[in-house]
Image 1 (tube, helix red, strand yellow):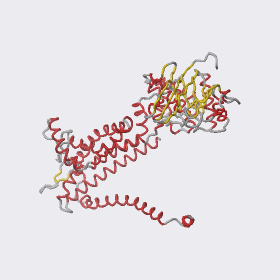
Image 2 (cartoon, rainbow over the protein chains, first blue to last red):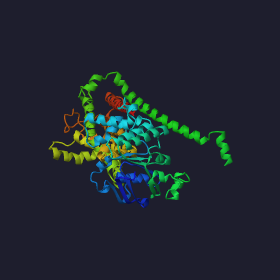
Image 3 (cartoon, rainbow over the protein chains, first blue to last red):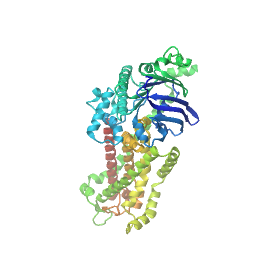
Image 4 (spheres, each protein chain N blue to C red):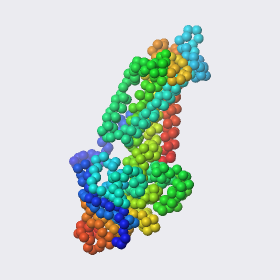
Length: 257
Length: 302
């Protein structure tokens, strides 16, 4: 992983406040192209905020202020004029599966349509490809016109992954995707993520509460605590007997948190 | 403490039984009132309805001469068309404005502005209908005469504008509630997919809230159909099949309000007015029934 790595996202001295309450206290690190970066840490450590800064959905939170910079392919995201195009570059999977109250087909076709695609054949192709990538196609191919909200929790989460893939993102961010999903489905989704990383060469940021999930999937792992980046290193080091910080060791070994 | 525990274990406290009985009575009373009103209205009109009234003429003739000495004619076609046309035009004005305002208040304006808007809209809802009628009679009358160069401003258009202004607050507040009830996670998910604010509204929020939005429109329409005083004052109150927005007309409700005070209790004219009441009752019943069926249909989709 160390040789020939290209930086995909460059985060430098990022500070975020909600009103007077700090959420991120000046963090800096890089996300490499085509890696799976695990982000672990207890609640309130700023993991979700970080993802929201990257795709600029934090802007909808009225009292949030952002300092520092996040560069995507060398371009500061806060200066990008086409914020909708930026968001389509980044696939986002939220903690609770949100099947939009539309048909399964329309859920997956949502982003391509908002980007202006109208060609039925192309949409069909995208829907089928994404549902297959998300390991959902076989279960829903006969009822694409059923409502997405009617699917089970695990299916809905795979639907949101299919939806996140529909705009061919360069980066896939997953925010604790397995909260509402049973272990078997979690394993299936993890297989999907590995496949996306190796075959589709996607950069994946995996925020997770399950430290073992980071251990299973991530090339590198970052440990966040109370808005600070405690440590970022290869997953092997983080989960070894001697990471750089004692507190990291304590967290991944379940001594606290 | 101990005594209390013993007490709850032994039997349901009296207050619990009393409250349950009271709530039960409240529930049942609404049914009793509706049937009671229907029974009363029906009883007053039934005699003439089944014995003497030509129902065909009642529904299809535009000739409303209840006080003619030689030839009394009770044709309500003009009144029915009046009610329908003024309501339809009012809804054409109120629905786009009401839904637009609801979308703006719920999705596009800042929290401070939202509070101000809500207070103003509630104020609008609190204006008595006779005041709207007064505005129609004076202000709107003059404006319509000037703008359209019409001989008189007390027209269907005038009444529709008044009705629209009265139903907009209802539509806005119910539609806004419906939009606010859509979970924020839908908005976040759609925004993360690169949708603009407007795309979020028409691709996600409107489909998700269509049930509540429909209820808002139907309640607004029900308000318009039932409204009496404003249309009585603003539409000219003259029996006439309306041919356009600038023709004067009269509604079913206004007819009852204006004439019931002048009839002898129990005579034909009196009973015909009650039959009009039955007709109104049936119209609102059908509207509500359709609304229920439509909403049930929507529910099955979800």
